[in-house]
Amino acid sequence: MQEEPFNYFNYFTEIEDHFRAARGTGLFLLSPLDWALIETWKDNGIPLEAVLRGIERAFEKRRGGKGQSTLVNSLAYCAQAVMEEARRAETPREQKAVSAPFEQSQLAGHLRGAAGRLGEGYESVRAGLESLAAGAEEWMDRLEELEQRLSTLEEMMLAVARGRQTEEHLLAARKHLDSQLKPYRGKMSAAELMLIERKFLDQRLLEDAGLPRLSLFYLI
Image (cartoon, rainbow, N blue to C red; front, side, top):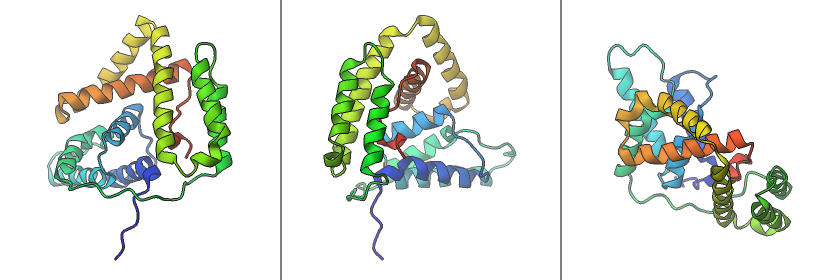
């Protein structure tokens, strides 16, 4: 039986759907912490299959235990099992080219829309996005490279936003993060915690500053 190619753009949605199914409740919204965790896994190249198996293992272990009547309210509950599956994983499946799940016009709209939300101080990022939008047709066949360029532009955007962030805003974001992570710290290594903390704080900063997410994952 021939394997279906790994679809780069299904990473977030597949994990979200799998967690909801394992949890047994269809109506459940992932938290900012959950999205930060998924983005950390993606950036570290953890295969989708390893994440899905980790979610299954975490819930199987939970169902086999006693006194587990409360619902799992965060994907962080599965973090340890996901990392164990990632370590067991063989060489990640080759990511074959697949058709983009969006049209050229949608890609151009995403890039121009993001550029239009940038104000004073973000001129270089806006110029970069407008240039990419103008070449949207060419980028449709080079989406992985485009994603890397968008990641670079987002880092530039974050650098400006960090320079404008007040101590009070940063402290409030850290307190919120600590309250979200507290029940799950024992399930993550220090390195994992450091990565997810950075992702969470970056996402919170972009949200508070009214800045767009540039990744193609947010186009879908």
